[in-house]
Length: 272
Figure 1: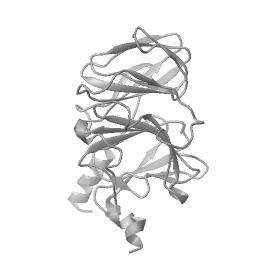
Figure 2: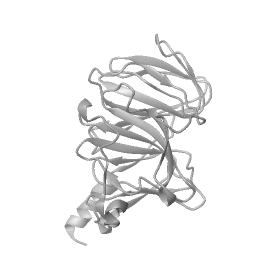
Figure 3: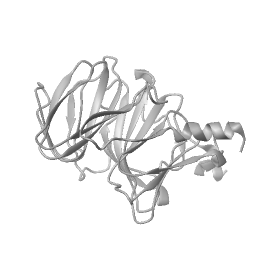
Figure 4: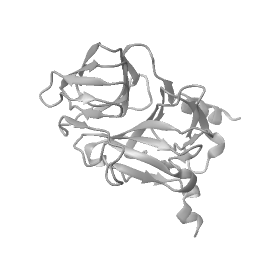
């Protein structure tokens, strides 16, 4: 293997981070330690009965409740009780108190706040018809279910976020795509306790799959995509489940339709 290939694999391997299960607030992916410079990820593990005041500073923050139940307070617009997969958004220079009613896990997306976005709460509703929030992407072995938590139509400066579930033993983000000129992305996996696992695949250039890295992922694994392609595959008998976090390089680039499919796997081009 050439030094170039070795360097590429080392770089791609560094994109995987295993988040902490210890109680408290944890920085997982931030510009000082990660290749991603726009998309930031935090994790809050809050034992039942404890409270935490979340302060946004210069960031917009989008917490999603991955496990447990919680209550929001000390905010003029956010006072809801939260159940699993409920989410909310706070702009920069804002804060809210979170109290765990049960042992709770929050995955928290962050990005630079640039004056666009107001506090909002979204109740998770699995019965929503397919539309702007509830979506079905792909087909066949690449079909997956998506629930937006911070949709393109919601006000925000940089972030677009949602939850994805694969089928049993199937692929997501297939055909592979990239959006490296406009957005960074992070996949944050949940509901995949060991020994359950899946694969998150990273490669940089169209068709160059001999240089790919297949990250083993399970609950708490978070994988960056600052550039390149990033499909995933679930193990037979299981599903990949993850919060995906898109962060644009500017508010003008905050869009959900900027993905570019790897042409060697594009079905339309394969039919030509």
